[in-house]
Image 1 (cartoon, rainbow, N blue to C red):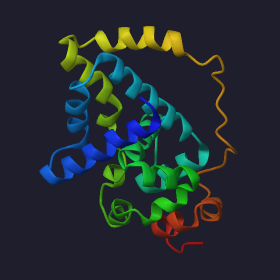
Image 2 (cartoon, helix red, strand yellow; image 1 turned 60 degrees about the vertical axis):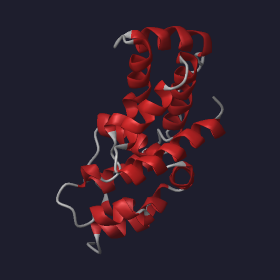
Image 3 (cartoon, one colour; image 1 turned 120 degrees about the vertical axis):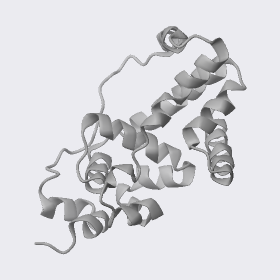
Image 4 (cartoon, helix red, strand yellow; image 1 turned 180 degrees about the vertical axis):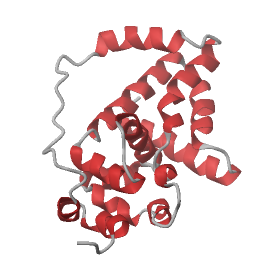
Length: 190
């Protein structure tokens, strides 16, 4: 599955799920389960590539501001949520995480009591496994197939360049790096 096909799947399911009022992750599982095991593995590969591309300090800082904090696990859920927004918003966030200040759910999160729901979408992380289970009837089959698939396609370099690390609890630094999000979530405090 090439990147364009991946985004076509996300966008078509986003539209259908919104129309039906269904959760996106469930729609993605159903859509992928109509394909082959190979297609599910290729979807998972694209998903991981996109998620890995967001594994950066500036994106994590955006998640930290939006969520009112952000653990390692929550950051994984946040990156899944950004992918779930579709190609346009994903590309915006990847280019400039501060652009998420313009996303409607982020604007709504400013006044929400629990901000962890804004872009944090854990279930999207498990779409491929769910689709694989529907195809095979075996809950553990995906992980075995994924291990074999990734063995053939594994990258040899596991080092990740997350960019420059900085202190998320330093309000001035957050204002400097993410001014729009900081304005929303930190206000004008000095």
